[in-house]
Amino acid sequence: MKATELELRGVKLEDKDGRLYYNGSLDLRGSGIETLPRGLVVEGALILFGTRIKELPADLKVDGMLDLRFTKINVLPAGLKVGGALILSFTKIKVLPDGLEVGGDLWMYGIKIKKLPPDLKVGGEIYRDKQ
Image (cartoon, rainbow, N blue to C red; front, top):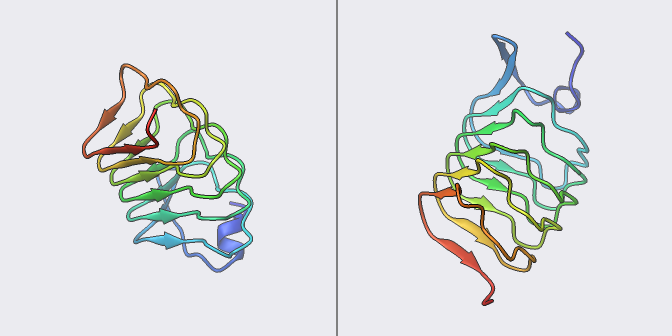
């Protein structure tokens, strides 16, 4: 299997049944990383704050918090499931995808989402600018 950009940067991933697992929280702030591999499962938090990443893999799974603040991401994959908080503040995201599930709080300050999808599931609070 070809090494991923994460592995080339020294991140140890375990291949299980065609998915790449990271055991713990993965903080990529300041890493210069531009892509995440398909099939990535992070068994803790995934912090992408300020990275150059422009899109998330369709099959990404994050068991903890997912922090996307100040990224270039403007679309979330349909059916995204995040076990902890999802922080979208100060991104270019304008629409939440169908099937989004957030186990913790959903943070949406500084973004222009006007409508929440009817099937949105949030286990905590929703924080956003006053409409």
